[in-house]
Every structure is written in structure tokens, then in C-alpha cells.
Amino acid sequence: MKRARLPMLAVLPITVIASVIAVPFVLGDHPLRWEAGSLVPHLVINGDESTSSDQAPGVGDGTGGSTSPTVELAKVDKEWKEGMPQWGVQIYWEDNADSAEYVEKQARLQANYLVGLHANSVSISFPFITGGRDSTEIGASDKTPSPQRMADVLGIFHEAGLRTTVRPLLDEASLDVDNGDWRGNIQPTDRDAWFTSYEEFLTPYLEAADSEQATTFVIGTELNSMEGDPRWDALVDNAEKLFIGEVAYDANWDNYVRGPITMPVNHLGVDAYFPVKVEDDASVDTLVDGWNDWLDKKATGPLPKITIAEAGIGAMNGAYRAPGDFYTKRAVNPEVQANWYTAVCQVVQERQMSGVYWWSIYFDDNPNDKPDDKKQSRLDFAGRPLTEKAIKSCFTSDYAGPGTDTAS
Image (tube, rainbow, N blue to C red; front, top):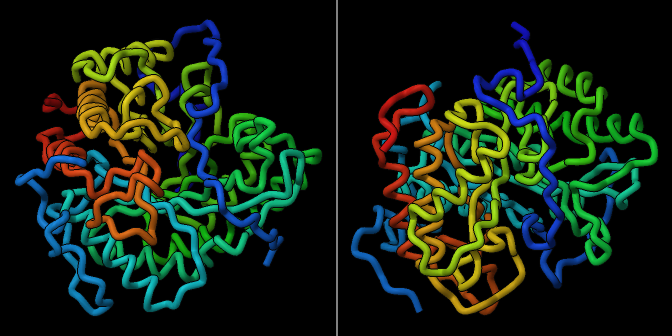
């Protein structure tokens, strides 16, 4: 049966502020994925932290870190069912043309780590590219996993009992980021051609997601300048013919608070990097207040139709003022990251949201290793004991999901 689709604001039983909130673009508040040193992709069209003794099983203790493809997968504590909160992690996957055995090994490694955190959900974010800000061409790069390899990884996560989401993400390596270009301000010269190209790219991934019983397919992520275009209707109609699950859209935090997100989908995610201008020793309650101040610009009260599709912050001094800063490397401060995670989880429960996905784990990383802060982003949380403890506490809370009164 075709699902009714409404503008996202219409399905929320909440009060919406009519005025437009002006939110300036500040580089660092938008979570840009490209890192210095990455190769420019080839467009293919159509074709010293303290340790914690309260770690989850398989998190940093070796039980979840086996690299043997034949190791038995751990299973989630309780499989996600409709109405339950989505407790998840974003896995970012750039495919480096490794062997199928390596991909299986890494998928099992990541699945066991997530189970050790008591997650019940996982979202696979993967890159696609365009020819530039005004390009009408969308396609795969040499880092884009093939639909078949995506299906293989989805199958492993599904076997572990994890709720799965497939999430294409426009890779800003194909944009002129030095001049302010990012996925949220693309302006294709021919929108008909852009949507045709995008649909052709998405089709085999929708089929792969459907074949492996994924729960959600995110039809677009942080595409601010493309939101509300009437051409989405036909693209989503086609997606719903190919994919039986939920078709969603993930908005960037600035556009979310600025005004209505009108997309022909029935679920909205928010990539939430709300800056909170407080000192590094701010309490969790202060951080919660900061988040609620941002959310209240859009709507007050419960937000049961909203999922935090991305949340994260650098484990460093000064991060509260720019949570989405992927590049700056100030002094490491594990408490900043752990307190932020605790606060976000509290907001999710108090506002009765659908869940949260932490950004992120790179598919090729070993999540049981301590982060290399000389090389890796400060946003990496895997291997940071304080943050892992905060995640475990969040994922084992007694919050039963939207519409319940069990938020803690």
C-alpha cells in the first residue's frame, strides 16, 4: 500500500515558529567528510585518556575484535521493532576495492563492536560524487561501494540483528570546498537532468537495500538547496516501487531550524551539530539547555517524528562552539565528548525522539583500537572509554520510544 506522504512539518503535533531563523553558514558547523590527502575521485556516470572498567562486552576487550570472517557474529540484545528507539551508529564506508573477504571481515568486526555497545541500529553512509556545484551529473567514484557489496554488508548487519539504513552522501571531494561549496549549496544548471541522473544512480542501491530487508533508505542528505523541489515526488515514487521500507530524508541542522523541510517522505532525520557557546567544563544540564534552545526555535514539546541522524563532537577543548568541526585539532579532552553524548541522549529521551545515530566509525578502522589523535578526526569516538561508557548508558536506558512516558 502506498504510504501517505506529507510535508514534514504537517505530521508533527507541535507548535512551529512562523518567523524564519537566520543561521549563518560557518565552516566547521557543517560536517564535511573530505579530508586532506584524499584523491580527487573519477566520475563514473551510469555505470591520554583514562580507561574505564565499565566497558561493554566486545568494546576494547578483544571479544568483539576478531578479524576472522568465519567468527560467529554477536547478536543484539533485543532486535528493533516498530515504536522502539533507534540506538545506532553511522558507519562511513569508502570502498577501497579490497577483497570480498576483507569486506566481510570488517563488516563482522563493526557489527560485533556495535552489539557490544548495545546498539540496535546501524546506518551505512557511503559517498557518491558530482562534477561540481552546477553539474547535472551524479555518479560513483572509485570510493563508492557497488550495490552488490552494499548488499553483502547489509546482510551481515542483518544477521547480527541490527536495524539497517542505507544513506548516500554527496562527497564534497567533488566540490570546490575552498570556495565555500558544500553539498547544501549545489545549483545544477538543469534540474531535470540532475534528478534523472540521481535516480539512475540510486536505483540499484534501492534494489540492494530491498533485497537485504533494510528498514530505511535515506533519499537525500543535507541537500539544502534542493529541498522542496517538486521533482522529488517522482523520484520518491520510484524509490517506493523498488524499496518496501521507509524512505526518509536527513536535513542539516541549520535548515531544520530555519524553516519547514518540505520533502515527500514520511520521516525526517536531522544531522544535528548545534553549536552551544559554553566553556569546556559546562555541565550536562547546561548542554541539554543549549540543545533545547535550538530545537525550540523550530518547535516546542515532543518530537516523535524526528530522528537524530547524526550527532557527534570532537573530544577536544572548545568543541561545544563548533561540534561539526572535522578539521581543527586542539588539545584532546575526552570529557567534552562524553558529556555531549550524555546530553544529546537525554534530549532524545526528554523530547521523545525516534532515536540517535552517532557520527561515526569509518568502515576500515578497527573500533577496538585507541584513536590516533595525530591522524584521525577528533570526532572519532570508538576506542575512547568515557564516550563508549556514555553510549552504553544511553543504549541501555529505559526509554521505550516515542509516545512513552519512560524517558529518563
